[in-house]
Length: 71
Length: 254
Image 1 (spheres, chains in turn cyan, blue):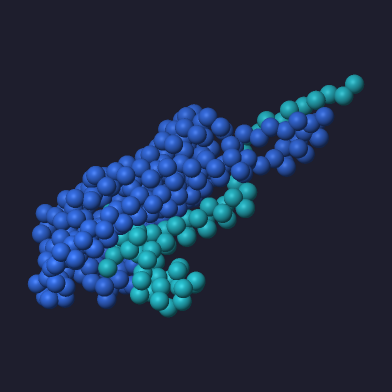
Image 2: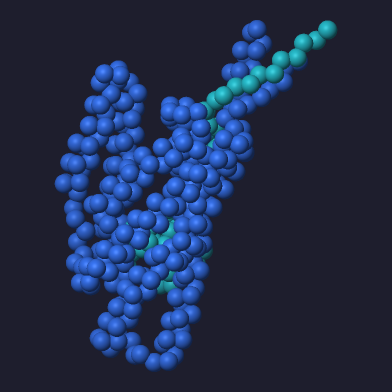
């Protein structure tokens, strides 16, 4: 006769993958909204992204409202 | 029994559930932040941008024509829509950090309720990485800020947040190691550390040339809505954590 156990464990250990995903999301998100001056889109568009400054303009109001330096 | 202990060593937090809860709570709080900003902060932003426009008309940089206003209105509408999207992205980003820290320190926070735990952590993190940096480098509306100093301002702002955040992290590690009679040393140490950093870090180099009433009203509005977004994040994350318990792992052993 086989016995069955159920292991119930409370663990605050976060997997390395989950921690890495969250740190990347944190870094990218804060940079996109609070710091980008054309750098992210320049990876695709080249130097003209610095003139258009699309992300900066799109996030402009949130950038001011959440305390990041702007202009 | 050795079979059971072996299984326990290999158990981990439910990663996918944990990520979904953290990302959903952060993004939702960010959308709330953007929507609240439309009502609370936008009137001050519009006033400040109005001053920028008047300055441009005054110097002849731009002519005030019906065509200008038509394009300007469409542009501002696009920026206001962008504010909600940017709120979602920023909320997701700050929520990712909040969720990660919550997962690590949850066991050390007092209370049996995850909402209360999340609110306590929220108040500490908000103080350390927003309120204290805000005292040194408060938010400014448009019409304040020189384009030529943007890189410098961005670097001192992020350096001060990093100093405050890493300082708090270091002193919290010390807090855990100290005996109960000496625990007061840790918050006292952080206070001395951040006060020295506050005094040594350079000031914002830009002069404010517009009405201080407008600037102060804008700053209060900014403080209120950022606080609302962090509280929303804590409430949503805490409630979802309480409901789904991603730190509990069950494994059937035959």
